[in-house]
Length: 125
Image 1 (cartoon, rainbow, N blue to C red):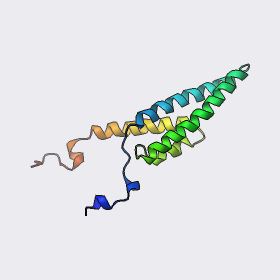
Image 2 (tube, one colour):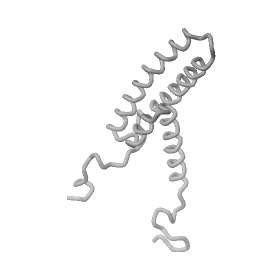
Image 3 (cartoon, helix red, strand yellow):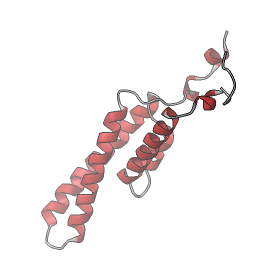
């Protein structure tokens, strides 16, 4: 029996899957709704817009949390992305976390051959 088959399924490294693009889109949409809410809340004379964007943010934020939670359960995003979304900044935390995940993925995709265990100047054969 190999060591990988003995590992607990909860310890797998998250890999982006089918939900990841939806998490990214929902995070940006919820951030835009949150920004509109803050804007209309700060400007005087917009009580109906504040109410509309307040309800939209409340429902959208709960939907975003649920979407990220499902993605965590499916090992498509790390757990800390859900924790970042629970910060007082709300959806802004998830956008920052997703930007960091995308940056890390780009950095890993451009890794040099010696980063994978092959030393420079050595023949791999």
